[in-house]
Amino acid sequence: MTEKLYIYDTTLRDGQQTQGVDFSLDDKRRITEMLDELCVDYIEAGWPGANPTDSDFFANPPKTRAKMTAFGMTKRAGRSAENDEVLSGVLNAETGTVCLVGKTSAFHVTDALGITLEENIENISASMKRIVALGREAIFDAEHFFDGYKLNPEYATLCVKTAYDAGARWVVLCDTNGGTLPNNVENIVKSIIDSGIPGDHLGIHAHNDTEMAVAVSLAAVSAGVRQIQGTINGLGERCGNANLTSLIATLKLKPPYNAQFELGVEDAALAKLTQTSRLLEDIINRVPSANAAYVGASAFVHKSGLHASAIAKNPTTYEHVNPEIIGNQRIIPMSNQAGQSNLIKRLSDAGIDIEKGDARLSQILQEVKAREDNGYAYDSASASFELIARGVLGIMPSFFEVKRYRVTVERRKNKHGDMVSVSEAVVVVKIGAQKHLAVSESRDEKGRDMGPVNALWRAMSKDLGAYQDITDGIELIDFKVRIYGKGTDAVTRVLIDSRDEDGNYWSTVGVSSNIVDASFEALLDAVNWKLVQSGIAPV
Image 1 (cartoon, one colour):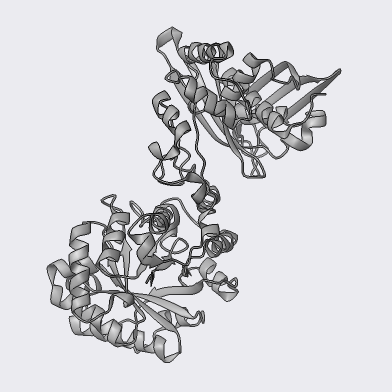
Image 2: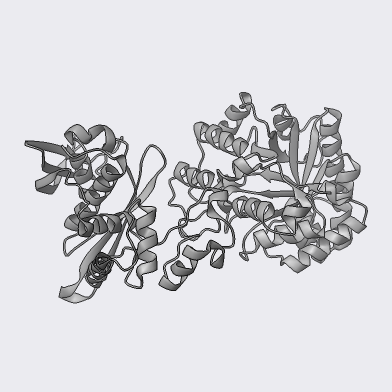
């Protein structure tokens, strides 16, 4: 018989502690919708009264299947639970679930709060009782619990038992500093269960300062806790929180957890895991980690020819799960380490069927290896590789011809008399019998110069005639530059990541001694690959 395991997401509150992350009201609503579609059990959306954005959110919260949770802290010493304005601000959000953080380390109580141990116990008890009296579900976040337990186990245990006895539905054991190892966590959790708090009333909240927050969370589950707190992609202050993206996939797919526990995350929601991970990174304007477990772009990449050969026969030879289950995909890249197995599989994925032993396979490999000797990198630019293969096979359409382009960067005074940079690009292309000329400056919504490559992209994508409807949806999301070689023989390699309105991602590469020329080559490949994928016939 399976047990229920509850997923508590704190991306919108603890995740916002990430350096450089500041959610707008619209961001919080979009993320809430994503989390609810993922079928988490609780969404901790923020601290009402702590800042205007959180207050505005709770003033008109979206309707969710998940339990909407307001976060705050226990009442302060010297005030009653009814007359503490900070606690009242949290309770006034009128969420069905309220989570309050309180100290459970004697050291923090006396040295950080500057109150007596007895006053802290009273704060915890009165705050939990106040929530329960209002008919709400009470959760107690036991801050610095594991560090406090190591120094004074009797007091840390008294704190969490006080919260439980006062009516807390969940008592969450927090590794606030992120330094407790999995075996210590497991032993301490068992001692708390032995003290009288059932495991199905305990949660775990782990930070990732030793790169073990996921392992710590799983150790706590093995010891008996039945609620896991964390964030999507492990967002959080310092080194982040337990990564729910990895935890959800592991709990759903890996024994013994998948046989022992029932999650609210259904199979259809699990298939959106990769998309959810990448959409969150898009919202915070951060490039997704290619090496992220389960959802990373490299999580199921098989570069070695030996690996690709085995994968073609049976994917389980080098894959621990089927990538499609979590919405990811298998990739067989091309590089100078590739063999025919990689090549055939990669061409097949691109919809190009070719028999093993075909002489043109060797031609493609020779072309790829010769280009990589000159600085290209096709293991990270699969779209550019596909265009090369199509060219060798004679099936690459000619959509347009670039007649010329020019980029200028000028320093001039603006209306305020300040010297500013202004990048401008001119691109002339020939589509069929017609020439198209486009000119564009590179400016963001605040009028700031975005650089020559951005100007070049805007000009090139401004007027592509019959192809415009297809290319309008292309967005450049990352731009990476590397110098390849040394001295006067050095060249610049530019890798560009693109996506379209359907959520498709692709990468292209350009190489030149001139960074603008290398960038333009990668931009051209990005457009041509999109046109090939659209199936449109050349004009």
